[in-house]
Image 1 (cartoon, helix red, strand yellow):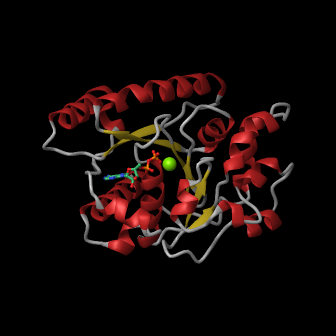
Image 2: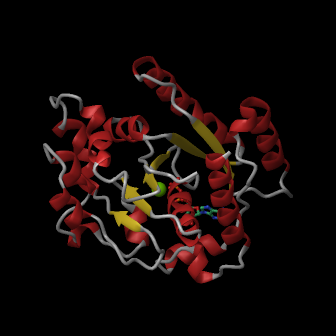
Length: 262
Ligand SMILES: Nc1ncnc2c1ncn2[C@@H]1O[C@H](COP(=O)(O)OP(=O)(O)O)[C@@H](O)[C@H]1O
Ligand SMILES: [Mg+2]
């Protein structure tokens, strides 16, 4: 099947440190290596994904913050906003700490949950995938990302406390399901898995029991190469394409493409 329109994937979990940014960047790179046209967006005020790619928000003229402020996103804004020619092989919209001000700035804006959806209509034929790195809290940005998405990808760090974190996200999804014309599609991804640890094995079992086929078959194991690559401003494929983490994000990309074409 030829994709005529970008699939938008929101990478979300209200818990921090579970692998959202790592998944956004490395899945984007894997999809790009497979020949997909990919745009990644940083909607987290911490702007970790941007810094990871050596795009320092304070030095940038426009960021995702401006996208949410524009009354009408247009081609001219996107051409200033979208960074191309990056080493990961995908295009990128940087974030900014001021994204955290949007809660207040957009207080009186009509249809404020649809800003990203509307903006992306202009881009849907330019990309096969748009991956959105979400902030770790409920708010206007997370709602925009979920509303715009075809799928919410929930990275779950395979330890005990991480499972509690997703309750909040499911509450948000349930709430949105009441107002959206279709139910939010979501899939869970086990991250930082260590099969030697009983707690990890237990959480993965629990995830599969509770969420069944919604859990990706691919499991991302703990791999120190991720720290190394983020410290060096690279995706794992540039640091060590043979690393386990690289192979697993490639496997995840293939699993997604296979599901798409099924
Ligand atoms: N599979 C993994 N194995 C080892 N370290 C990882 C893995 N995934 C992410 N990390 C590291 O864990 C930290 C948090 O990951 P990150 O993707 O920034 O989480 P989030 O965006 O959810 O806050 C980072 O230092 C990252 O390099
Ligand atoms: Mg992050």
